[in-house]
Image (cartoon, rainbow, N blue to C red; front, side, top):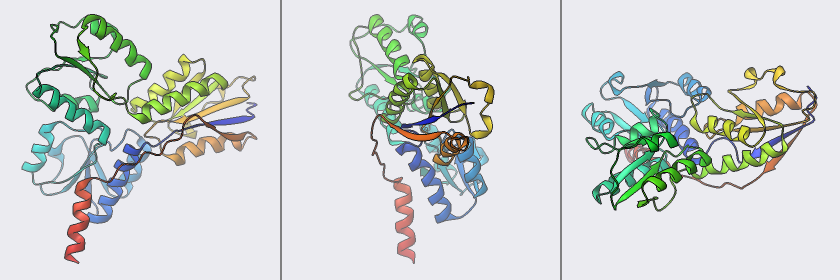
Amino acid sequence: MMVEKVLIAMPHGFCAGVARAVKAVEDTLELFGAPIYVKHEIVHNKHVVENIAKRGAITVETLAEVPVGSVVVFSAHGSPRSHYAEAARRKLYLIDATCPLVTKVHLEVVRYIKEGYAIIYIGHKDHIEGVGVLGEVPGINIPLVETVADVDGLDVPMTEKMVYLTQTTLSIDETKDVIAALKRKYPSITAPPLEDICYATTNRQEAVKALAVVAPIVIVVGSKSSSNSNRLRETAERFGARAYLVDGVEDIRPEWFLETDRVVGITGGASAPEDRIQEVVEYFCNQGAVAEKFVVKEEKMFFAEPVELMQARRERTTHV
């Protein structure tokens, strides 16, 4: 391996929604003490989940696993309406860490249904975010499409009021193809007022596109369960680089690298912690490479903490 330069895509790693969700778990542990429960992985990164588990956050997949009266954090991916009702029935103290951009799509579903629209949802089948969005209006069938072939197979009748919504972590390029197919089949279909694909997904994909042009090999730090991390790897490949998804240094394989590889690009999915990304950078620097930031766009987004945490802090301040 003769890598001389490491280019670090900017932006990369934690987005504002992920940072908010992880901090919500940490703050909930601080306020209430261990154990607390997290419904679904707080974000799709195994190291984040392992780290909060060490501090007393128990990840579960169903609320039936949470003892009555316990504290539970809902993950960043969003939840069906039925889960909120179940939490109330079980007298759980709920901290809702759903990303505000995912919440936006939930609200759009409710609004468009009330206004009489037919909705088509673009997303990955069985992804937890889509399960939450489609569970917002129980009893109403909202078709999910993932590919152009799925659109071609739809038997939804065309009406004057139709709209498409999308999973926030999809590939921009893939989504454009599906949207184009929807518009061909349903000329009356409209987009939501603001695109549902989140700013972080967009920014990281734009950065990795530029990175793939100048780096023959790109390492994407993120877990295999992370939709946006997988899309980054696929995007880098489409723009000419050999790309690999790793959880950390331990996954890197020397046989991936050619003798002609002088430059390596590194990025991280929106749920990849910064320390894991920096470990990968150091792996190459320890072999003599020089690291440089590859800035495509500045990112300064910030989300306020969940309202339930604000309320919990006020209650404790009042009782002190």
